[in-house]
View 1 (cartoon, chains in turn blue, yellow):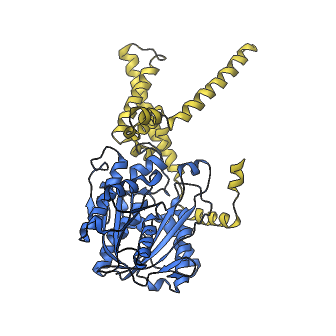
View 2 (cartoon, helix red, strand yellow):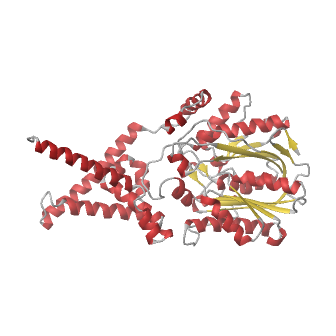
View 3 (tube, chains in turn red, yellow):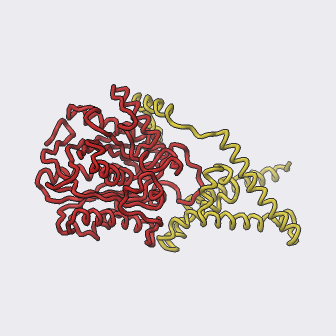
Length: 333
Length: 159
């Protein structure tokens, strides 16, 4: 049901029947390694290209999710997936393997919650019994496409972020046991003129703030209604900016409530500059770490606000600024 | 220029950028300069060492020792790139590892490694000068301009 101009309330509250997260070696040394279902000790995952490695991560996360839900591929009606490679081949090629009717998404790093919101909408409306939403990214493929070669010796500024190598998937059902998706707010594209691709946090922070404020306004709720509000991949820089912008609007939250997936995933000593990023950042932290905490009852109700920078290597070279977006999904344990 | 027009910011964008800029950690310029000096100097010292070897033991002159010295430094930098060490060194050293010839070798080797999965022709061959290309293009062009000026000066009676 439409609430306000850009939010959905899911009256039937679709259930996240199962979810899974897969990660690479850097994530295995991270702060939430125990929340990953599958961890690899090699960034190549035994494949001949990094693109194939990323696809393998996505396939593994999806297959593990289906096994955990005790279902078969044929039981699932639709599959939403997004990633950061050109023409989202990771998602499309994984969908080829899975053989599930597929919607490809490109919301950059916001794809995880974009997929979850759309999946919840379809299940809520009775359009399907089971829908799977997933997102993936790979540090190597993203560096190759958007930045410099992996082994290139450029000194990165402290505002830079480290792309997560991983994939996360969640399976939604009309009924069953598990955390429930209550509501979603779809973000508008916000562009405050940041042009530095090594400063994504500052570029994306206004989009996250706008979506959080819209969500609160549409549903008439405030920060006290949630145990945790997690942005996708703002990192240290973007997190500080977003917190201050929210404080200016009178919304003050302690750091244990307003957090960021990019700050949760790695340890301080891993030296990831401003923090983690990538489509898999919010996907693995939400579908691994947060789902486990919801199932354990440590968290009751959370809002995940996945943030995405909608730039391309070409738009950056043509001096365009970085348009950003954020989608929020409310989940109850 | 179309780009100039695009870069015109609205007051809201200007305000946000000032706001955000105050909250972004800055590059440690002084420290980076010191590290660049230290590492860049050390790389040059290694180069000097090889030059000395080529002059002392292989009969090169100070002028002709340049080529084998540069070749040695390039091989070393390419190996360090392949073993995944050079990028970590560069994060510490900044300009100290980019400016010497080792930095140039690193740009070529790193791009070649990244695109190995697209094959030798389209991948390695087509992409290895992705970053080094502009250096060659503008380097050759600048050399051409400087050479023309030099010839003109000579022609006018010289210095």
